[in-house]
Image (cartoon, rainbow, N blue to C red; front, side, top):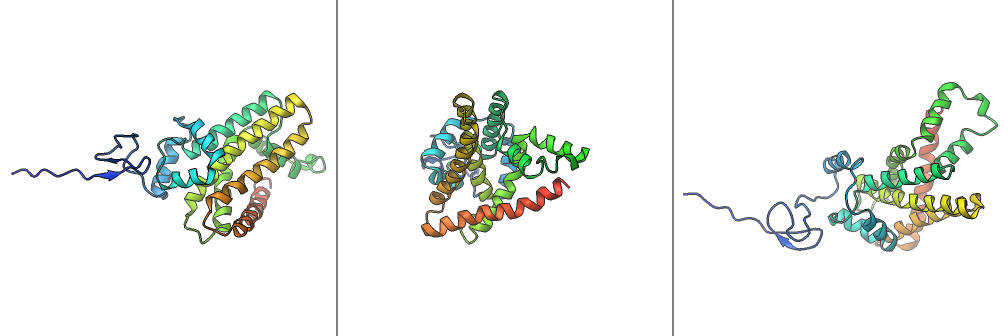
Length: 253
């Protein structure tokens, strides 16, 4: 006699509806939504860098209105309406780069490279290989952004060590922040082109983007003491500079 196995009822992590099967009958999210770990992170990465899915405007709005809460919701499993974080960072960084090309302006990474390793003082001392590395980085802003993401993630992971979030969850956190910051960068270039005073807009944009990151940390780590979050946010940027300096020195050696 055949035994019929009763389907197990589950609660959707995205909309909290009760359902049976592989997908939520209310919102359509998969039942296989787990805490961010290496396995599902790599699976998400392989399907998201070049894949444009729905939710871009929703994610942008959420990250402006309630950034800390929306990222925590994403990590907890409410992912159906969101743009995938790696694709989010890559897509918006690409848009920023295209805007810089249209208005014939430098990206912030280009400015950093020029000011740090490519100043007039050492320009003539660079060999052909170093120049080719510089040009490669300048022409591939979105890819460079993705290459910097592991360093950003390590910086915040170390700065906020002892919180409940693992390294890959910090990777997701920084992907959303970097993508949103690219919007500020694109706006600054546009305003600089039409209103003039480009250097002022760039400086203001840089300050705004850093302030936005602090704003996200302030809300994301809501269970930490406010002053502690502020100090750890500053520490994250210090750690990033300490990590990126030797890496850039090796790259441009």
